[in-house]
Image (cartoon, rainbow, N blue to C red; front, side):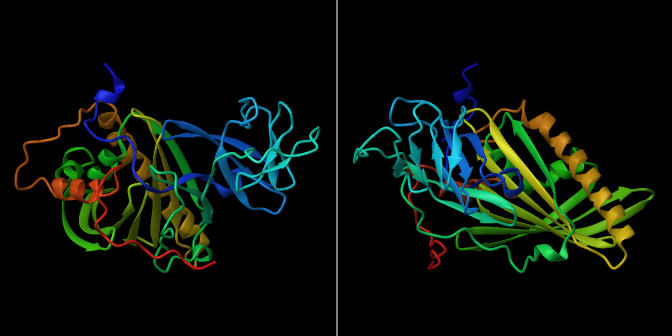
Length: 328
């Protein structure tokens, strides 16, 4: 089957997308990034700042990520040692008396936040007009060190987000009791409060889940009523091409006064999250996308989620306000 025909949807959206974790990109390192059907390279200069540029030297086409290195605050091509900074400007050609005016590589906007590296992408390749939104009152110092997960799965990003509003599947696939959802739209963000319960260890655990759909590339889920603690899961969805998606999850569990209880609570949350995720993954990788599904009154807000998601697609008409870009 032609992979691009599996989904009758555009492959890519605009927005901020996580391309890695800060701890995995130390000073002086270079890393290849594959997404949106293209190849980029990210690097961290000697000043600690991250740059992302197209992974092809405009000189003779070599890959920066295939043997390149960092020179001061620029990435250096392995072939002839041309160097380019975070703005895409050529900063050095060791054997040339003059740098050609056209010696530039396409650079991309980058933000580091909460131990994650985000890159902005839109169809036009222009700079962002809005900042990556903050995550409520989240303070990393109040949480234990996060646990990162990364999966490459055969699914469209919209399907991952639809999964969150698909109420009946929580009972059918995960063994939860049927949850109830409340929706609230705020600008570009969609918020869903879900009341749910599940039977574990001979008792019924009840709780509230708060989904914050910031944009297609990033959302987070807050678990404010877990036994002994709270948890926060960052979910980053980045299309690799028309068939595969990189899905990164970062789990934070809140510290308790008794560290031993934090350890137990964190272990339970990780176990439950991965159990649920792998149950979903088995279905995701084999399902077909239906543009006009036959739905019933208990199916949840599938179509509402699709309408929200559609505003971000390439060529979509932008009608909602964006978060103003913060002054530097």
